[in-house]
Image 1 (cartoon, rainbow, N blue to C red):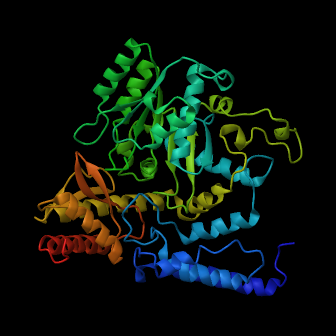
Image 2 (tube, rainbow, N blue to C red):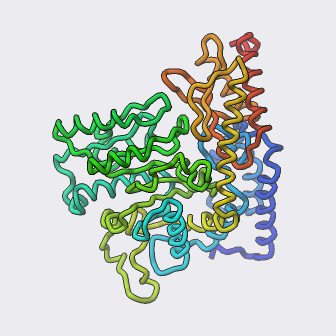
Image 3 (cartoon, rainbow, N blue to C red):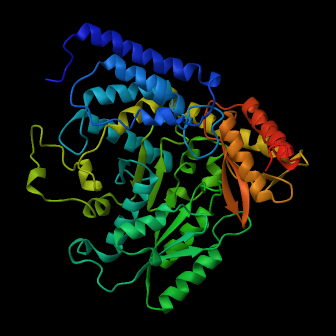
Length: 475
């Protein structure tokens, strides 16, 4: 038996661990955003496989000393490098409850699945989908994009494709040059191949050029291909651009294409009244992929896929394996099961931390947090526009700002600015390349961030740029 020998002693240590994590979040501003990992700390995790037991308190102490201080830092309000949510203490506690319950949400008649169904009902309401729409928690939008592509393929070729394959049928899919790489990856994993993806150019706002999309589909039809899938982006990973979803929906309907929306972080902008109009057309999608662990601030991981045609979704994944036998009563009842809608038979209780987050905060407060990150992006844009040493490299659509320090050899200098900012612990932006120019990229996602964090970031970037161009760092 692997339960504690002394439950009272275990309870004391457990409370200590919980207090440590609450302290970590409460006092996060007192820590650097990120710091380099010393070699001796890495070496602690090069030990041989342990055969004998050790104390829980010892493992906890190692975590506090060697893991917690050297994490990515996305809990910190100065983290702006990638589109990572900040999480909440509420979500942390819910994750603890889910881990204690240790439910496998692949199937069976159990209340944790009813919790997931409740969240699905809420998601349908957010996006205006019908009651027949299906949905599933997954690891993240990469998996949600893959599931959507498989359902779309089944819709075009029929459920028989699962057994007989595609043979020589040359399906083609479409996404903009600003789309996430997981769209291409989904085509790779599906067996259709990355070459089946047509990369559509973007306009000056980094949004899909719908006229170019129409031309690409026309050429493929003339060449004997079978266009079947177009992915619109709601919040591109580079610039935060939102494609004209209504225009893409109109085109997809006209041409008989599956209309998918990759809304990894942007889709939940539907919760913010000032942002929702930017997403007009998302409710017309055949499928939507998004993450609660980004703008929704649910702890990792909590991705979601929503499909308008629930029966088609089920036909793309359901199995009649004997070990998945269903009954009309007892524990084997409750069909269909979540495993009928995706590739995973073993699934964690991701729905609970999402349910807690929505239940405790409500959609209005979550929407206000989303709006707040966009307001901070506008503040950052104004700081850049008022500073002659900085320049914007892309329009600010939502909460992502791309800019650079103006100087000779800007790519080298701006890459160095980002690296030194990260190493300083003041802020953690990232870089991207737009029109061949390296940009400092700030993705403001954390609900804890405020104007002082933005101002500290800008001031530090300017100071570093000035020092680098004066040669004060010797490079």
